[in-house]
Length: 138
Image (cartoon, rainbow, N blue to C red):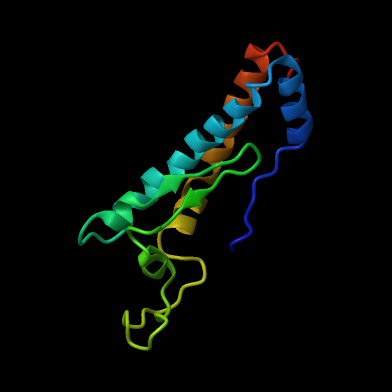
């Protein structure tokens, strides 16, 4: 489940072509992927339990020029992966055991629910970036 990807054929070539036009253009790819990742975040966030709100606010888009990613947890909410996937803490009983669900409770279900929208948003964004840069898109 952790290795679900959406591949874009020719992304490296696209990135190279953008770099040839202007060295700053490939950075726009990351912004497009972050926008698509936000669809997962806004779908998952309302389902995450709230006590302090830190778990919900820990969801962040952290895409690179080649991968769309969602960061979960972090230093301010290190228990957030436990909320999503379950399991038992490093010390038995702390936090209390939570049934382990391999596909998770929040992120992966949100990804599955919005997969078509995410793919469309990525496709439209990359296509628009290519056209604005003067590349011929097919």
